[in-house]
Length: 83
Ligand code: FES
Image 1 (cartoon, protein in one colour):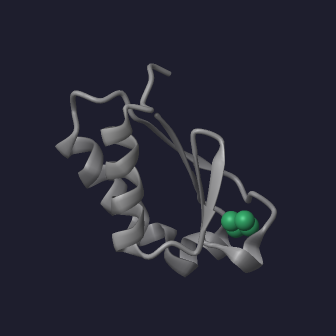
Image 2 (spheres, helix red, strand yellow):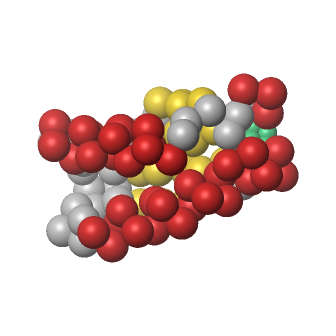
Image 3 (tube, rainbow, N blue to C red):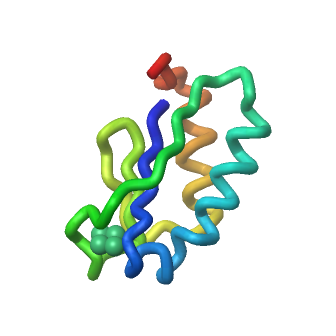
């Protein structure tokens, strides 16, 4: 699974700073899954952020609980893959 967190100033201020910590915790909880977390420059859609891209799909304006649910669901569905 590849997770790209927009680290542009708008997304970072609008929630991705918190999502970063949540994602780091999730990765620690799922050490057996290959999850590549990286920061990304502005994805060019600031007004709809905070933005996060997971395996090529962009999610926008996620609450903390929503990102956890999405990641957990993707892991359960086995969509994770080596990166
Ligand atoms: S800062 Fe994230 S889309 Fe611009």
